[in-house]
Image (cartoon, rainbow, N blue to C red):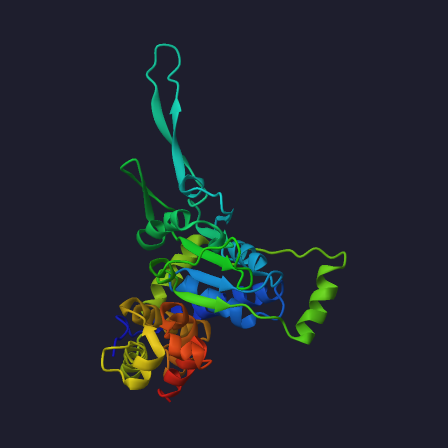
Length: 333
């Protein structure tokens, strides 16, 4: 079992104080975005883990509003890119422009930064851009810098990408490559709000009252909480549950005939790392000092769903990735 490096009351107090601040963030976001409490929590899990999230849902479910709201309450510099088929990599990263040195001066190139240089980047409808343009995000998402004309340019810290995708429209879209999907810590499915939430939404959004959103954290405070997340101890039984779950979803590795029959390719080690961080972040949000196996079960689907694919036989039988993951997770209980 990993343990806290400090066992005094001070470190426990820091964890509890951080949990209270994050709960305030949740409450502020829920006051603007109705009926999406689980989506808000999972997005915060992603950010506290230092990762990126893929938000999938039909239009009109407040995905854009969620990113804008979290940017404000977390005190982050947020920018948005609307992905379109004609978007080029330079529209995301930036480009070098030739400048005239003036009278007697020498001309030279100056790098003009693109919108990727933000602490919270919204990649709206990411699957509408070509694979070439989508790949412009890969280096920044993994290494937190981009390379242009052989020169390295660091993106701001913290750096998080929250990408949205419409699951319905297929014409004019490009599937995200597996390498890019693996960079997303969680895939968060955004569903319709319930009746009560939609009723509250009607009155809140069609009246005269303006919604005011105030910052609760600063970027520096957020990074301190992200470091704190990594200090939370993880019990041995939780580590074993993470390993059992991810390895049971890998065909051809002795996981079992059912796995080999249903899963074409499964999650790699990055999935285990994502689960390890995500369960710690969820524990902190809930005000607990350590994660549990229940956290692994709760986060199994958003961590694994985009990191695996079913076989043709499984799809022909009506199987879904969610159903397979839920059965694998149920075996942990």
